[in-house]
Length: 193
Image 1 (tube, rainbow, N blue to C red):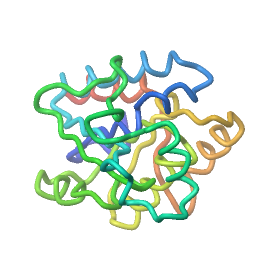
Image 2: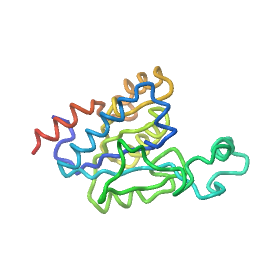
Image 3: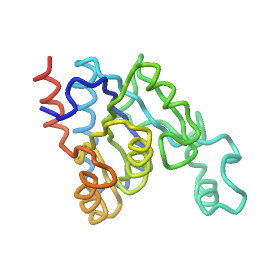
């Protein structure tokens, strides 16, 4: 059972949007994540989606931002146009969705307000990329005193070495998070019912 049992928990599904999902070396992580989402919902765990999203013209990004240039070139992550969640892990009625124009799920969003209003003090992270949204959100979450579990096999990174190394580091200082698998976490949910 998770060392975080007994806590009010939310599962964060972060940046699971094409073409970001295409960066994963092992696309089966989407299937694992989808099964984990089902287990979370069945156990009453809140599922919260964090989407990369921008207004048309990308006013959230500076005029000289290299990210802006890359996104605009392909019209990526424009709200309501090109920022949908991958169909294998898509939100359902009752799930919360927040949009962020930055790497961390907390920057430019009302995520913390949603979490605090629901009494959530434990976050379970799944997302792309391990060295991007997962790292930034984990760092911010720990600074805000949330307990954090990282589902290592529900995360992906374009660089397999970065993914593996970060998962090894996330359990120690300064993150002090639990790193586990989708199956282990889902099993802990069943054991706590």
